[in-house]
Length: 492
Image (tube, rainbow, N blue to C red):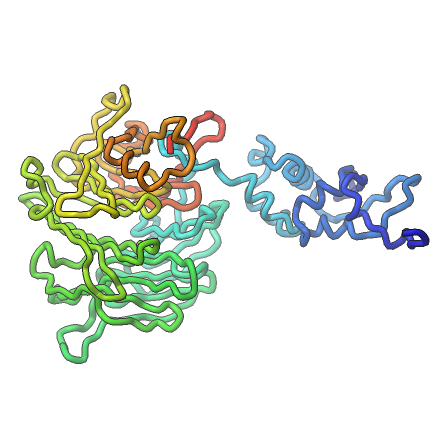
């Protein structure tokens, strides 16, 4: 527009305009577009709002009283979206984090430091997180997609953020936490097999939020019930927390708890606990996509394993499907080969289990559940037999990102569904069912044999593009990530 005052024209409207910065006495020359890539609310983007100097004049440097060497690294991140290979050998993550917080470009560094998509058969041990005290983990919770992890060790909860930096530890009133779930971004639900109740802690604030106990005015035996399993993972303010309570005389049930009010609803699936098929669940999964709660209990003894799996409708309080092992749903040739652990692949709408005697892994499609819905996975890899999986006693199974991880005495293995090139992309429901029926899976060990000798895997959690695991009698939590240098291609 003619007659417009040029003093009102800012650099922000000229992405190719040059900008000179004097950081700690060292000059850097870049463009407006590079500075704006840090985000509209960043300090660097704000520098572009100043009036545009005359084009015939050299741009005057803007002085910033910060470390110039670290700024050079951050400028590389803004330009390319990648962290220079030498950066982590020159600076600690904490140094980098402090600088990006000052400049307001944390999101760009987070993207640069984020691991590539988790591909199990290409995962590598990248770090071990060791709490400062009581470093033997008793429970894990990786309920966030940013790759952060909360670790219960003894009666404490330690938080590690997306960069795996320790952000704080809260001391609870429990002697040993045996179940831990992230409820809200900063609130954890914790319990102990040695103490009654479900307890909520603000991990960042280091305070006790409140507790929930199971009570029944009509049955005075129901008191001091401990919590054996928790299903949570915050996704909205109305998302309940499910907890399996068990009294001293083995009476047990599942309660839905409102995390905002800490009020419990009606008891679901109350049972006496007098037998294996009436024991308190040791695994709970809230299958939000189907409005169901998965519960599984397993016990072992001199004669092997026994247990049950059930799908509960929390609205009606009724079980919509169940199977008991050994018993109903077990084929004659596999009678006595009960499951040692089970989990739900919520994305694939499937239930997976690992058998204690044979070590076989089986899957049941949640859309076609019946008396015996199990399909036992077979390997379609010519090299799959190079290392024997062995038996499944004391196995731990975890479903994450359409992959099935199994920790057993022989090591950490992963089952991945194979998709042919013409089937790339998101599968339809029919295609997914066909893949299960055709046993289109590949099995491979994630770790090396020397890794397996470090100790038996006791817990696994997936978060972001990381797999976290702890081992029996071993300090710390292992962090596994896929490599962005190997060129591995996901088979999912």
